[in-house]
Length: 243
Image 1 (cartoon, rainbow, N blue to C red):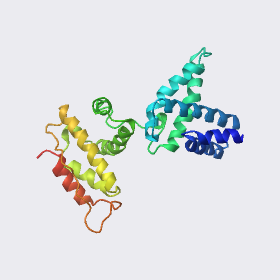
Image 2 (image 1 turned 45 degrees about the vertical axis):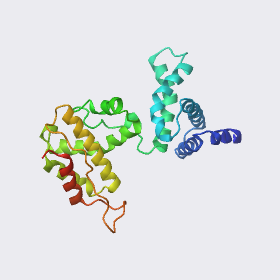
Image 3 (image 1 turned 30 degrees about the vertical axis):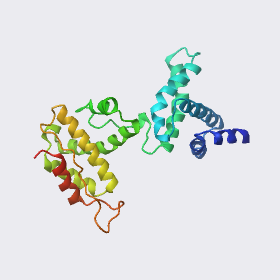
Image 4 (image 1 turned 180 degrees about the horizontal axis):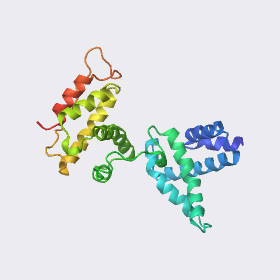
């Protein structure tokens, strides 16, 4: 038992695997299930190292390849779709559940809501991946920042081709009530790229400008302070919407 614990701790993902094992123990998971999950995660550790992973944020990009690798090595006995699903679960479930604990913002695919604008602008996220070459973690950030905008437009009944400065002002004012400076900067950056893509695709008529929508914090404020709604809205409208 102690040898197994030492072996886990010695792995690159040792701290994350150990935390996940503690999580399973808190759920009163059976010992056999814990052992199976830890074993699969040990294989995942070796697999991602072999593929050149160097940080935790890279790990989501390797999940599907690892599942295929696991199935090739452990699924030769499978005779039915049910058998194959069981083998896939042996690898995918522990890995995705561990990543949910280890990687900020990561959620298992089965628990994820639809991608923002997946119906109205289905090409945007493939554009980020294929043309801009963004990593999955950066795409997660776009998802997080654009989902509230998608919800706002849906609730207000506003289509993308009808966007106005007033629409953006109201949305940014609402977001600035709760987001800190870093959150507002992420929102601004994601929206700027999104609006440029909409212009390229002919969904909005005028090209959005590229200049930065925020000023540095004023005297007496820190980066952890919430960004003033009036400043956020006014500078954002001037920076991104058609004149």
